[in-house]
Length: 493
Ligand code: NAD
Image (cartoon, rainbow, N blue to C red; front, side):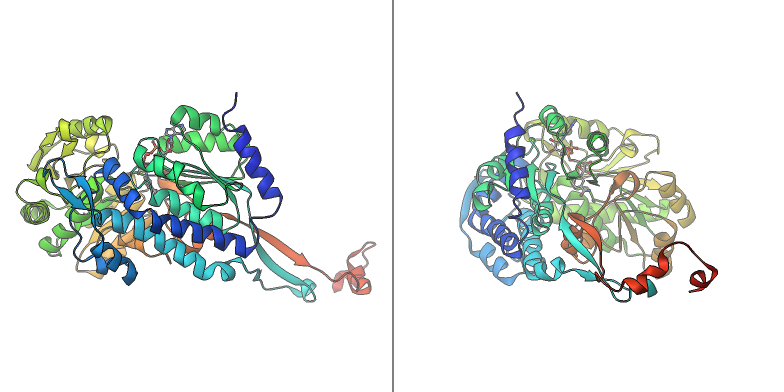
């Protein structure tokens, strides 16, 4: 018995009825998503706290990172969620900083942007014409694909489900969302609460792990949007190929971070430590490793120690600002990586709390496991290079990363790395701030993925760009020049 057949049949019929196409319907779905976020914020923050320990402290001033002033007011004044911090044993405010900025606000901003621009995005796009089509109307129509499947991961389980969903609904598709089974508390809210805010003839959440997803992927979809690791990306793409279904693959990899000798180590340390440890390092665009000279390493390591102590105190395990590893399996994998190179900072772990200390490893060899796999935890290896050229060679010898970071006071150095490498995204002199701009496409290249989204790029990703030419039914005398028999006279025209 196929557990998905009835649901998919229902959604297909809804799409065929044409009901998802009008702008009013699409706007109603986006407004539904917005209400879901507003009315269930507490529930969502609690689910995120349970899944990823995003209790992360009392938010005093998130205004800088929140685009919306009202949102920041709401989160500074909301009451306690009574989510006990396991180490501190106290209740923490619901306004967990990381969850607020990286799950709730970012999703809300995508919805607001789509609502503001929906009609403009939907408009036919007029294109230039040639001599033979001067009397015609030529345009690109953005039409929905039909039935879309979104597969999302556990590390930002809300944002990475709702972000693509905004684009798919704005573009007028019917959608099946399959959240990660690993972030099970967020999965439960998405499955039980979210459908109530959307038209359920056009939207469904289905549940399951690899086995169930494998069965789901046997079905034909009109588009598949996958976020996850490259190995599973290959499984998804293979399944999609059987139906010639187009895909977007948002994957991961190892993001290099080159630190030039010409920079201020304290500033670099603040930025690298913050972005490495955000969400306990479980971020696809986190700086994965540092490339720098031995001289810069000597200055950078104490600066990293100082930044980590300022951020998380002398005992980071008791800090309410540091997250935990998602599960036992990933904890064991990360603990294994602590034996690579030599521990310069941190190195502690506690299985009972799924805690890995913010750690810096030095004397790391390129062949060691920590330099072979995506780390996805608060561990930062430093690999020494003797020159900028050697750093660029190192980066180019490896798979193309999802993000690449360069720190230097010299714009020439930043521009040279940009010009001589390739990556999904790039940020000079900071961590993953580029993804906060909805005006930039977000996606990978090579083994870090294909396709992109965010803002208008999401709408375009979930729309078929149909090439349209409307010609006058008459004027046959002019068009007759095309028809055989071809004579020297009509060939000259
Ligand atoms: P994952 O690939 O294990 O899981 C992603 C989704 O695929 C989940 O819904 C899961 O249920 C499903 N899945 C897992 N194994 C499957 C299988 N064998 N067959 C079919 N479906 C399967 O990824 P994850 O562990 O949840 O997330 C971490 C990975 O995702 C990292 O590699 C990270 O870099 C990447 N990631 C990328 C982005 C991005 O935007 N590029 C964002 C977040 C995470």
